[in-house]
Every structure is written in structure tokens, then in C-alpha cells.
Length: 393
Image (cartoon, rainbow, N blue to C red):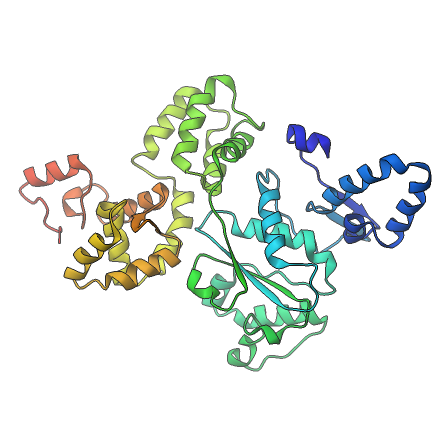
């Protein structure tokens, strides 16, 4: 554990025929053994206890007869996960068995919500008799698979099969009122939409990685080490600035640039200014696709013209076009597409690029036909063209 703290080494605990909770709390037969050790090793036992408490809080594997199916695979390179888990554990209040707590994990696409949910699940699942982890709920619901989700949830938390006659009957067995769950239950919901979390006890908002963690995460994918190679330091910092702490972007671009020459890095970074990475854009665009027509228009206007502008100023302009600005801006904020701070509207650069790409795709090679122009060169050419600005509102 000292090497983990001082050198950032990865620790993957394997709990072989021992409950991780007993390791973490030094209880059960594991605790009895420690009590016996205190007789002869009094000065060292507390150090061992502290180390094992930390180890027990790390996601690992519980082996009884093979790999325990409670443990979810979350991959490696989990940079900054400890701080997320500490805060989320605090919000869940695991030690309290007298209440039901529902906590939402909220953040933009690609920020790591599912990874964090899996990590906390692996850490605390052994403290519960029955557990369930349902992934891709929204996508499955759209394809009509809600029955399967409901039946799986009931099977996981009761150990029995249940027959559900219709969706309206079964829907109440997902997440609803607190009294639907037994005392001591803990429920986590991951979402991009703040409005879907109105019945939760607390919300954990996931923010982007700080520069130190972002550089480490990117380096693990680009160089398979925790820091960039000497010749790539400046270019690596350019990538970190471009990604603005979004873990998905750091992983995708790290993997893309791994093993390439510095000249290729420069070429890829130049390309990104004009052609965003498709893997990153596809994830971010999911939230845009869920907007109605007016909300999409407001989003594109902010991406092109109003980023960093005063909210009241933007609202007045949009309302002149009958855009229902306050409703739309509030909805975009709840969907993590914008943020509002000190009454000014902000947008992540990659989300802004996604908006620009939506407009470009209308006519990829003919900016004159785009619905909005924001680049001075494109605006100049549109004015100089005979067909210029044909589609500008």
C-alpha cells in the first residue's frame, strides 16, 4: 500500500475464501486472527490493520469456487478513482442500516459515470445479501426490453423468478419511492439528465479530471506509463488542453497516438481542429439527439455564438425568435450540455465541437449551405459567394 501511495502502483486485491468486508473491518475469523497477533506484534498490528482497511476498500476479486459473479470488470488505469469512491461512499452512508438511500451519479457523456458506479459496486456489494447491476437501461428500454430488465432485477434481489404481466405493473419494481425498498438498501442511478433525479437523497456530480490525473490517464494509454516521454511532453499537454479533463477523450486519443512519431501527433492534433474524433463525438451526441427541435436550435446557437455570454442577454435574443429561452437553457444545463456560472453560459470545448459538427454534416463540403456560420473565413467566403448565406436564418 505504501508503493501504491508513493509511486502510483496498481493494487488488485484477491480475497481468497475470505469476505472483503471482514478484511476491511477486521471482523469474523479474520478479526479473531488479528486479536491473537496483537499479543506478540502489538506495535505492528495497527499498521497492518490500516493497510488492510485500505486494501479492502479497493475493487478486487472475491474467490470462493472460482471468480465471484458479484465482481464487475472495470478494466485498469483507474486514475483518480479513490477520491470519487470516498465521496460517493460518504453520500451512500453505508454504515447506516435504518434507512434507504438513493444517490444519483450525474455528468456529461464520457465522464466515467458507469466506471465509478461499477467500482463502488465492487467495493460495497459484499456487504449486501442481494445485489443487482443493470447496464444500458435507456437503450434497452427503447428497444422494448424493459420486461427483461425488470425480471432480472427481481431475480437478482430476491433469488427467485417472477412473472410480470405488463410493463406498467413491472415498472414499479425499478427505482421509485423509497418505501419500495427494504431498510439498509442502497440504490445508485447514473444519468446525464439532472431532471431524472428528483427523488434521490443526494446527487454526486462528476467533474472532469484535474490536470495531474488527466496527464497520468492519457500517458497510461499513450505510453503505458504514468508520465509522457521527454520528447512528447509539450504535445501531451496540448492533448490534455484539448480534452479538458474528459476521460473518454483522454483514453481514445491516448490509444490513437500510442507508438506514433511526433510528426504524426502534430498532424493528428491539427486534424482534430477540423475533424473531431468520431468515437468521442458519437458519445457526446447522444444527449443532443434527445433534445426536441427548439432545444437543439438553442444548443446550436450557444455553440456557435453565445458561449461565455450573459444568460439574460442570450435569453432576450432567443425569446425574440420565440425560442422559449429560459426553459431551453435550463434543460440544456440539466442535460450537462452547458453550465451556468455567475450568470454566464459555458460549454465544454468538445461539446461545442460536437455542435459545430452537427452543422457541418448538413452539407460537409459547402459551408454556404450551413444553417449557422461561426468561423470568420467561412463567413467571408459566404458573403463573397453568389449563393452565400442562403440558409442563414
